[in-house]
Length: 170
Length: 288
Image 1 (tube, rainbow over the protein chains, first blue to last red):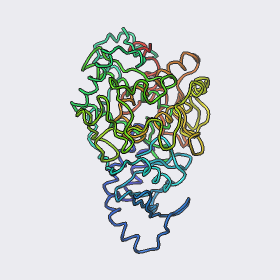
Image 2 (image 1 turned 45 degrees about the vertical axis):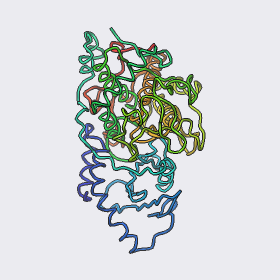
Image 3 (image 1 turned 135 degrees about the horizontal axis):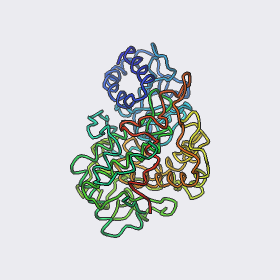
Image 4 (image 1 turned 180 degrees about the horizontal axis):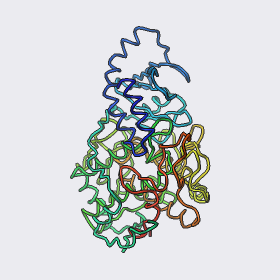
């Protein structure tokens, strides 16, 4: 996505408490991120890349437990937020990271723990990948079954008498 | 008449079979994978922008309560006798106790690739192909107890630490708060290492494999785990009757959390329900 679109999406998210989930926007964004990643070897060749960036580094490129992990911090131009965007790949496949409010990172593979740096999060993801398994791009997919409805629909589906329940604290 | 959710250890052989068969039928129809996608889609982290409905937020508990009801409704359309059982991980704590038995969820993943090879959800049984996973593996994975770096399930003491906090949640309503029942149960700690994962998060980590990732719903133990957390929320409500879901009102103008958390009377996407409405479900189900 362009910076303009990214900013627009973020502003909409701030203003609208019923905004759709971040992940869906992210998933859409990943399509263009994949395009960005295909350019990454060119970018890497055009400037010196430190072998493994610690906290504060802008990129890393290493082999960890037989897996090739690469990460590049994306430019933040045009963004009003302070969160940096990283593009991480494991054996060439995108690994999406999320950021916690305390500044730590978690990955799609390991969603219930967070790590100090993108590199640590990427290594932790590799730790969990079984032999022969590769990351898979999670398609946004239709959310047809996520019926925006009421719990009363569930009650109705269950064929229950909902008398009284509707009025609870209403 | 409310239906009853039981401890999975107390289910009869017939109840176990019917619960498993209803899950397999949802999977066969393609409905189950929709639940996996919903959970992935609504996982938003607090260091980013946008509304957090499901995690790192006060609505962690009502969101999952509503999500469980959606799954349970789907199961009961298949078999009206079925309810979601809960797994009390403070009591059933080993890799061979319930629910890790051949007539329920099957056992641990094998050492070589974490693949679950026993029970109804084993790939070879032909009924549980992973289609919405984080990796391209088509089989369910588990690493019970985390073989390479063992951890223990939370204890009754860990649960009590959360239950004894009489405040539901505190500002800034995210993963950094160190007080309040919600995050003590959800389990985001400070620092790194095994001491920093509490209750809910620690159990996801103890099960490992699919349960550790964004697509954790692929392991049906997800529902048994969250039913237990839901029961703990109900227990907390009974123990602290003068306390309710917080925040009661949306954060004010100038508050960084404005638009990022669901207040008591706001809608809980993707549903029309509010946390207020989810606080009392005694007309729908109760725990035994």
